[in-house]
Each structure stands twice: as C-alpha cells, then as structure tokens.
Image 1 (tube, helix red, strand yellow):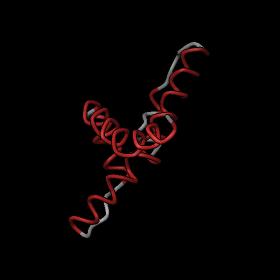
Image 2 (tube, rainbow, N blue to C red; image 1 turned 120 degrees about the horizontal axis):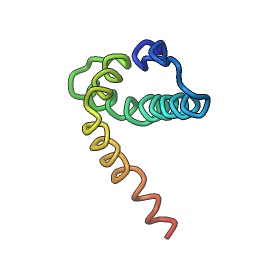
Image 3 (cartoon, one colour; image 1 turned 180 degrees about the horizontal axis):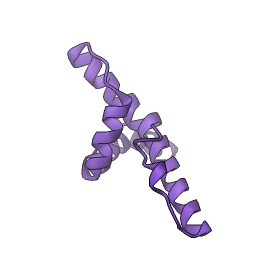
Image 4 (cartoon, rainbow, N blue to C red; image 1 turned 60 degrees about the vertical axis):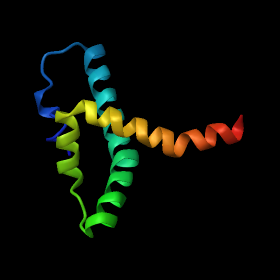
Length: 88
C-alpha cells in the first residue's frame, strides 16, 4: 500500500508540510480500508462471487477522487443517517 500512496515521492518539504502530507495519507488509508473497501467488497462479492483487490480499489479511488466522494456520501446516507436520526 505504501507504493500506492507515493511515500517515496516526498522530498524536500518542511516539517509542517511533511506532517500534513503524512496525516492526510493516513486518513485516506483509514477511510478506504475501514469504510469504502468493506462496503464495496461486500457488494461486489454478493453480485459476482469474487473478491476485489484492496490495492486496485485504492489505485482507482486515488485516480477518481470524485467517485470516492460519491461512495462516502452513499455510505453516510445508508449507515450514519439512521444513527443520527435515532439519537435526535
């Protein structure tokens, strides 16, 4: 996964920039592995009987950020909105 996040391309940046870059990449990794991959892999397996590659999904989402935003919006509506409504 580290090669897909381009950790080797971080050169000559200030300490603050480096912290920001690393935190952003870690947040991205957390969102993809804990939310998006879990949901997408279940849907794909249910429809096709096949598993999807976390690395390929990560590469696709990195190249298609708008798709990642759409998936997160769907996940939010499906899973988080009922919890928000219950606690209101």
